[in-house]
Amino acid sequence: MSKNQIKKDVSTRTRRGIIDLLKEQGGMDVVALSSQFSLSGMAIRQHLNALKEEGLVMNVEESRPMGRPAKLWVLTPAANRFFPSGYSDLSVSLIHSIKEAFGNEGLDKLLDVRNKNMQEQYLQHLGDTSDIREKLEKLAEIRTIEGYMAEVKTQDDGSFLFIEKHCPICEAAAVCTGLCKNELHLFQTVLGNNVHIERGEYILAGGRNCIYTVRQNKP
Image (cartoon, rainbow, N blue to C red; front, top):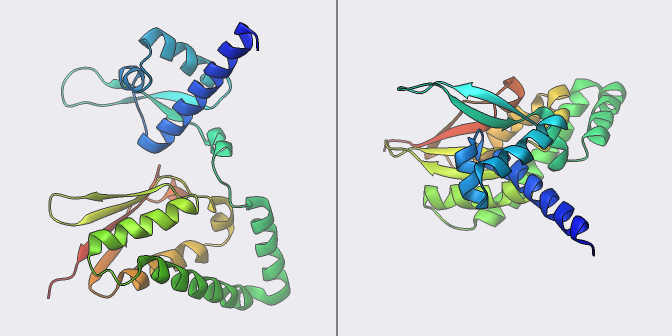
């Protein structure tokens, strides 16, 4: 392999790494990216500019309490092609076909079956654990396997944030809102009646992530 080919392969891996990191972390500045890849700011800017030319990243300004706004780099919607899509074209086509053949009632029945199957699968994965944090971690594991890039964060007030950074069924959910409604019900069912779960940020509504706040119910 020639030196030019090796250099090209390294650049490709670095740029893909930047895309993955921005998907995982959200907006990041050049300094933060440089520290993650052990590269100079100039080298990172070259990669970012190349990605920008491809329409995969863009820079935005984020206000800070003191000083000038921070210049952050974020992914554009075009970068979604690098992440699982859940066979979106086929899913959307099937949804339209089911509506045409069986109406909304038939689609609702199908979603009920899907929800029941997922509920059984999730409960089996969660096992007999009763700790809410452990339940959420296990739920994040299975959702990440499915392409949602999920994680759990503990809040100062003892509540939890269940964060999904990617939606592999986004296109299908856009034409079938029942998919997202069922997921909220699904989470509530597998986590149990001793918790309250509420969705805040929402990808389909323009949010960067889907974020659920989970609180333990008072006795």
